[in-house]
Image (cartoon, rainbow over all chains, first blue to last red; front, side, top):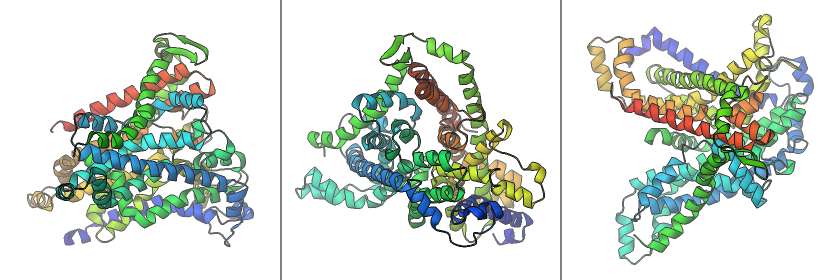
Amino acid sequence: MVKLKKNPLAIAGKILIVIFVLVQVYPIFWIFMSAFKTTEEFSLSASYALPQSIHWQNFIDAWTRGRMNIYFKNSAIVTVVSLVFIVLFSTTSAFALTKMRWKLRGKVMSLFLSGIMVPTAVVLIPLYTIYKGMGILNTYSSLVLTYIAFGLSLSIFLLRGYLTAMPDDMMEAAVIDGANIYQVFTYIVLPLLKTGIVTMLVIQFYFRWNDLMFSMTFISDNTMRTVQTGLLFFSDQYGNRNWGAIFACIAISVTPTLAIYVALNKLVIEGMTAGAVKG
Amino acid sequence: MSDKRAICLMVMPSLLIFVGIVFVPIVWTFVYSLYSGMPGFNFQFTGFTNYIEMFRNQHTMDSFRVNWRYIMIVTPLQVSFGLLIALMVHFSVRRNKTLVRTVVFIPTILPAVAVAQMFIKMLALIPNHGLVNALLDLAGLEQFIQPWLGQTSTAFTWLCVMDIWTAVGFHCVIIYGALVDVSEEIIEAARIDGAGRLRLFWNILLPCLKTILVTCLVFSFTGTIKMFESATALTRGGPGHATTSMTMNMYENAFTYNQYGYGSAVAFMILLQCIVVTFIVSKLGREKF
């Protein structure tokens, strides 16, 4: 490795990496920077210039006039509720599918895992007609149900990895001591599965929060829109005129995802790439 | 550990919701695809007419062409840029490897709509110049300032650029992980035997990385064949139909023109292509050199 240091190719590589990192990060910085500019600044100075002052009005506009407060609330409710159910369903199923012995276990497991491959477009039309028939279009239920169903495959896959690595001794000991299966699950498996659950939660958060296709199809009522559909809608209406507000909207919509990444980036990377690395 | 009631209680809720919302609709889509019109209104069994019609419908065929061009450009570039950067990080960065890894991954986690809105503003011409046009102005290249997303010729390219930008970090991190596992001894031995950089890459690294590269290709492909969110948010499929994907064509037919039957046929074709390509690629990946 010491030899490499003098190598001109290595220096070129370093410069290229710096450029690449800038290309990956600068646009995000640019969004946040532009969100603090006034309307005059957009037309008078170049768009790469720094804002002259911290102008919070854009965020207030985005939050109230841009209805980001409503969209944010909707997204938060739908995401949190589906995450709760995803955790509940996938931990219990993954446990029964990896640690308990029963006949159809293998088949059910591969059924769940095959769901990872299914392109969402294939189910969109029937789901729309089903939800229409049930009268749940434009409700949180339509999104929550869909998010749970589409969250299960990957979650069970992730948890399976953690569960297979978990030794059986402790569970056996607990069973011998007279614990029933629910106690074993609650007091032994769940605490050991903590990292797995957090990783899975984070990944699922990204997929649900970032969803556009389902929310765009099932929700047409403006007061029920999520952040992603709201942003799309808002940009159509005001996007061209009010640059400051749209930048603030974008900034608001990426803030939760960035915040979680800053706090838990190791878990995020591990979870997001798990499908590729273990698959 | 084989309490039947407990197993039922633990598996049934997930299984029901999963089968009901993921698997039943797939079969349902196929059934719909054999009908014309929409349910409750002029819904008639027409057999495979929709599938034959698909090949005569110019918009649908265009969307297949656009989508496949997109796959052929974006998938190889996502993975090869990922590989290139992973190699550079591995061989020319000594400190801060983790920092680089953490930073380049960021675009992967951003919502497609936000990324697309960001690119729209970066590429804007009116009312204000976006980042790209402003930088061109700064560099004295005024003649290149143009409405990037308003032209058929450039909109598609920028869509590709955007989706490569988003996913490069993801592939880079995966490939880098595999690269670290390639044993130093093999590389050292090859160096002592006098292998040049190119030979080292071609004869040692590439075979070691083959499995992970195939996985990356499959991953990227499952993303690019779904092409929908980024294109919808960036260009709405325009200008004209220059960036309309198969899924967007399905969406338009079903939800704009109420042709549920025809839309379902397009959806089913997407699933078929997905299965066939994934099967072929993973078959190829398992073969030895």
